[in-house]
Length: 131
Image (cartoon, rainbow, N blue to C red):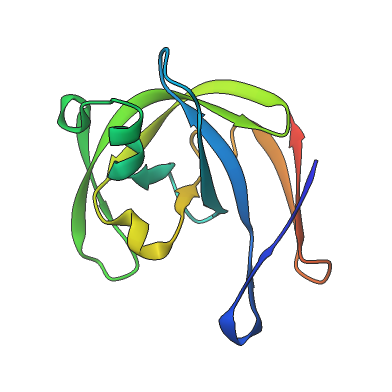
């Protein structure tokens, strides 16, 4: 399945795709995520946890340091991810303040371990194939 890159100001293209996130008996929530091969884990905004009625701080706390080196805490919870007709269960981290980026991040554990991912910047698309 192919997804077009999202275009940002100054003609910047990024592999941002639309998925859905679901928890327990809650309806799914649409959410945009950056397909980030450099990310170790999937991290979504804490606001998504709130919409899904997930008690944020009841999850396992972990720390992450991004490109700035500043340590931040996120909380791991089981969820179901849906995209392109595929549905699978995984764990993601929820962290306050991720919404400042305008999207969440899907990384190696929880996304790349589920799909073969092919980036094509010239065509401005990312292709996902279920493993």
